[in-house]
Length: 201
Image (cartoon, rainbow, N blue to C red; front, side):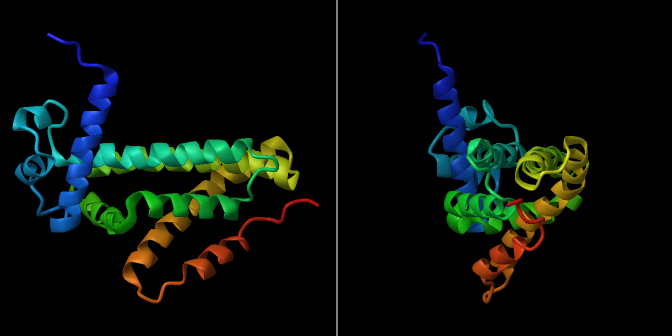
């Protein structure tokens, strides 16, 4: 029997996750069933359940794929000379989210809405939230040292406190862009620049 490679498994998991996202976008997370996802993927039930046991697992993979792409963006921004200011990093992240999810951006709100009543999604949200806070914390600590000139200890303390705020800015962007027809993304993103201290000259 031919050996199944890690690349093949990863590609198959991505295929299944994308089929799930299409189902969620069409029917809503709550209404879409595993049977719908199986039909959408064109794969057998065995192929699906060999990778995932539930919709929640599918959601976690899809969200992780989005996060992994954004981690690459943050890693590149940390290597830039000079470092991107926090407002520019926020713009980079929301542009990446919008490009990657496209018309599926409202799915994030559907998933968030299920978190309080779905313990498995609640566990996922805790893990995802921790990762997002972590990459903002680490980025901001470096920015406050290199861009602002704070001592490292002070920079890390401030970054630990500010990371949750920046995570909220991303969530606010998603929420307002989905809910409000008159949402002005440029005004929103330009306002973020008023939050961080100015870069040292």
